[in-house]
Length: 189
Image 1 (cartoon, one colour):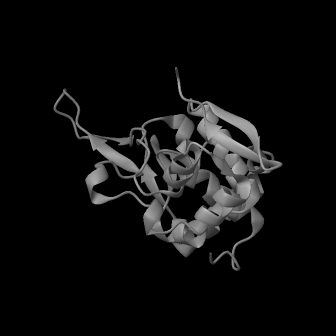
Image 2 (tube, rainbow, N blue to C red; image 1 turned 120 degrees about the vertical axis):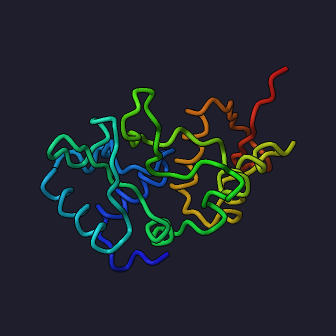
């Protein structure tokens, strides 16, 4: 992870965008929404470093800039993912079909194609989240320490991933194994 040249806000912005299905920095996390001048400065620096890139969007709520009726979003780049420690295992594969960022969608009116944000992606095979899911599916489940060791994430990042999996509909149950908290995915009966 090469975050030594990034400030905390830049790391938060990159981390948030990496978790968004389309890679967009928006909507801003709560920590960044309070001070827009500071956030705009951080985003400008990320663009200059090549860690994020601007691209047209059709949904104005996902626009960073909205000049001359051309809403522009900001999307994380591969360099941005690498800067926060996401490796090739977390990047979309060629066979996944969908890539983060804007995609072209043609109009039926014969007009120019309209840029649009990419649709939500399915879980990428081989990603760290996929590794966590595999651990949780084991009959014995997984402890936080086991998930941290398997992914290289910090404990708070691993807990956040568990919360994200719950939000996506996974029934994660907390049990005890050898006096340690153990997590498993509850299988529907």
